[in-house]
Image (tube, rainbow, N blue to C red; front, side, top):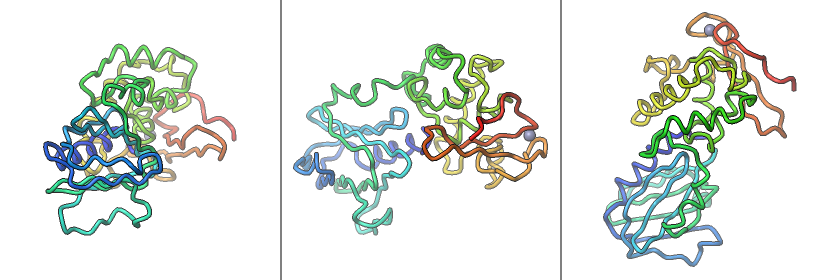
Length: 267
Ligand SMILES: [Zn+2]
């Protein structure tokens, strides 16, 4: 799943490409929206809220999209080949005179009144990259269920919005706990929120996500995706845990040398 920084960057690309111009093409290829035509309306702005993308149009309408695992928005100049996937995967085309934004494989695409955006994003906790970031509120939501495994609590967008699998794994490494330690037992939970915010902020302008401070590919992350390789800090072999097919849990990575806490649940 894209992390909040990826979604933030996507929203910024859409914002730069489409804002302050009227749509010359609007093609929404989902059954519910097949008859919707926003051509002629000015695009006001696009912003990210957690991992949700909100594109606002004059007349008080918002197009809400969510990328989940598979979706992507791509921006093209006129005449450029649309390269984000085969045509049947296109769910949305929004074009101004200057750019076309093409939404591929978007699992969520809906049109809302801008005044009703909370129906789509009102459940989210404080947004790590949003203007409403509220660290105290995020912490109290994170700790509301102290027995919950820390990675699971971090991934719950109702607690704080923007963390996906990569940051969940890296944050657990950085505070030295396994993903299964009850969040209430994390020695300094305020470090989790502070680090999460810092990492998303420094990475939102980058395409290579870096948590180690080393921008070289392959050295940019501590544990995520590094199963079987030596931990960059202590040399212990990084381990991974893959949940069963029916589980809602996510794949995890950890270094048994650097992280203390319970092992993964047995399969
Ligand atoms: Zn280690």
